[in-house]
Length: 368
Image 1 (cartoon, rainbow, N blue to C red):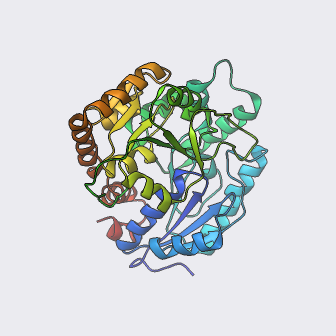
Image 2: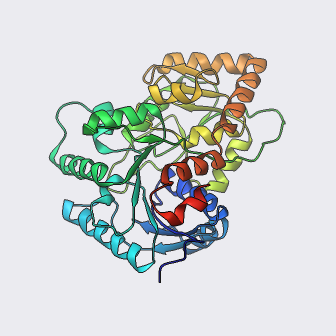
Image 3: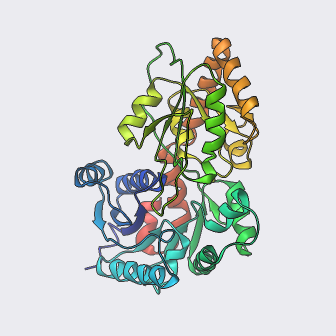
């Protein structure tokens, strides 16, 4: 049965393989605090049952394991369309007043509720940044579905103005997506002496994360560069690394413990629509060394050091300078923490609430 207007119901889709998972849980928790009822349709590989139980506890959302394929791991356009149809049926069965999708490609079905789709990333913009030549056939149909979904969704959201412009250009949209920054609330770390190593986190197998440059950087350093994240992807991708101290996949609590030590945090990403790992590091007071790409400049200019993505020599000099100048490193960490405070979860929730206002009468009170 549909829920009453006093307690609007929102169905969100989620991908547990990357930062979308944490984004979804934080947003669900914030919308629940505003009086909404939230269900999360978990797509793709599911986390362990205890992790799902913990996620329900902290978010207040009901998490539904669907076993539906993710748009970026599906083997055909038909699989994505079928997944979208399944989400539309689930939205109707659960009485959703709003559907919040983690990918525009999932907006293709005839949903009975208004649809908001988030442009976290996409194959067209990813390929244009990290590869060369025409888009291969396996990615072309994914791009086309994403383009159709962008036009069908009632609202589009992107996490930075840089990525909103890139998305608009990639798909020839009349209007750029609305911008709502991703948000995280990170516990304040201790003021003990910061760690004497460098740290990074992300899907190391993804060419966008530029793990090869990180590996070259690690070989130049006299301190360890510890890297959290998988080196093998879900569809056979793999990266060989020799100098990085690879920690493997860490859970949220383990990442938080690493960042609480306040190592120098480095990302040499070539493509990053936002970068939740950077935000978490900044919130922990880590000094940031980032690739000089448009999205990072938009978010962190004045609160980080920047080097070209593939200039591991410049990155090594910057790391050495930070370790040689503790006062500069501490000041940079304070600046990062101050900037991160502006990108908290409440600001993110308020931004999404503002975007959905007017889509359904039941949503307006929660959006106030």
